[in-house]
Length: 457
Ligand code: EPU
Image 1 (cartoon, helix red, strand yellow):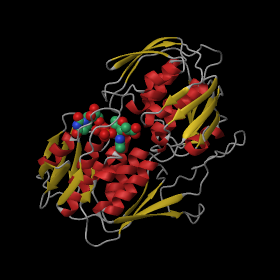
Image 2: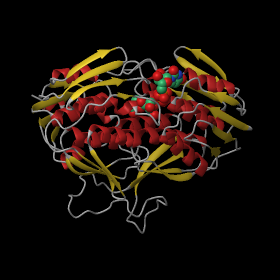
Image 3: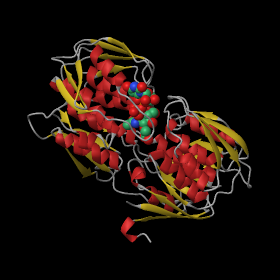
Image 4: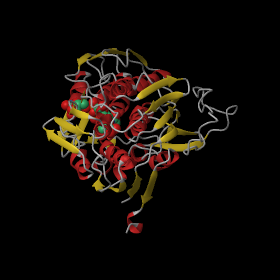
């Protein structure tokens, strides 16, 4: 188990490039189950959750291979922007400059396996995304129930109710969900609450259903819209994705497609908060400012200077100690403040002047970073779904434990801002969703080292 050793405080200064969005790439990979033709995906991040999804697809008969994409002229990616890497002579090159790669997914076995085993599903909830496409394509799917997780109970009842509305027979047996339908039939379905992977599962299923499906109260996250763009490129007929109501006209079959995954707004947002908490100045390249609007608005309220230009999003911390202002936040489904940035924002509030209240409305147990921040000197009081932060605090280095992906990012940022040495244990959580985080932070001037357990003293 690796850990991070961080020496601080260091202001994060420079430019950093967002990787592809983990939560957009995961359903995009699942979409490859819907066709026999190759699906080529660009900007898939090299993170553990994507490796897990590739292993799962492999079990289900879809192989995947990374291929290098050659230079701008020979670039096979039709969607790659001409200004993909804007040069700024005043700033050093971003450290994570690997050659552009494409991930090509294609069915390798003629006979489908429709069984997603517990061993894989238990390590990653997003495995449930194979349920919709397997059912739509093969009329049967057996997927292990994902169970609980560190950030709450997270049921999948909405996924199952939605599939049942399309005519599937849904049974729970031996820890598995079994779904069956000779062919799904379009229907009107309203989610009881907006769910991101639930909406994605239903889109993946409905595009091969007979007739029209109308989904209401859908999740409006940009990752849902990105999946619909891929599916439409494969021949699906989906309109309204990214809005509350999505209409899917079923088709008889889907073909291959090439698609470029959107930049990771959560990863990018993490580095912008990193600039703010360390008194730094970061230009985030390849980011979509509209997708990050709730965070950018909040950072501006806190006193961070935000500048959006064709080169990217620049976040500059205000000059002088104690010049950040405490501001309340409540997480909400998109376009509200993302729950996936709540932990990082809490770290920021420890450095702001005044008292802030952070309300978590999406997940019921997502404050596990609070006691760890307290070990670094933060004054955080958790009461049910709210946390009160009194600031500013001079954070000091300590040994802390990462408990989930975003909690890990919060502790790493706090470590860069803290005086002395911080050791963040259980970095495997971070590796699920942040590509080369220590390299990107080093490129911004931070003193962060990954230490393997066997080497740690
Ligand atoms: N919910 C239900 N029933 C369902 C589905 C969801 O009650 O059938 C509840 C959940 O328990 C939760 C709320 O609805 O309280 C929203 O959950 P949602 O289904 O939207 O979450 P998810 O699809 O499981 C995705 C991301 C999460 C992110 C959430 C919220 C992926 C692979 N995961 O999860 O990402 O926090 O949406 O935006 O897209 C992360 O990347 O760190 C992460 C946890």
